[in-house]
Image 1 (tube, one colour):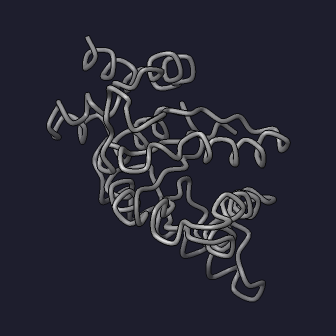
Image 2 (cartoon, helix red, strand yellow):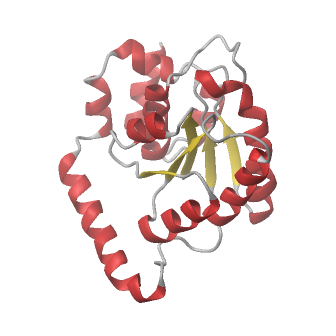
Length: 212
């Protein structure tokens, strides 16, 4: 699995710590981490939590990533931004039980973490435990056991509702302020990471034109 990490500007200084905790957990599982930054608070290209959502949508819909780890101060803004786009189901995760139940009940492809609120002593341990529970076994298996069938049915219903509610991603992106979208894909390592992994030519072509 290709797991993308995205940090916005208010919490960019924590990128290295988050990346280290994520890699420590998921690399032994055979997954690969792609760090899209921000890498520090001084990065030339500044991402807002809204741009986290734009970038997450581009990565997931293009196949450049299979899962996105993101967040902001409270985790709420980045979650809302991610869920504003087709092809992204993002949960707000503050502790390991959130992570486990989101994976098993909601079977999403992104989480948003609170990187300021409640992020104190032992925060790096909480991150590790969250990542362990998030990627433990196969997702979408239901919890608790007696709720497996209705939960899996509801997830399929939600997927169909979302298909009817959203436009094609490129159409959606074209209707957004283009400077905002361009800023989301202008990170120092974006081109190297994205184009090497993108599987959808329509999205790649849109991004190339945007960055030209």
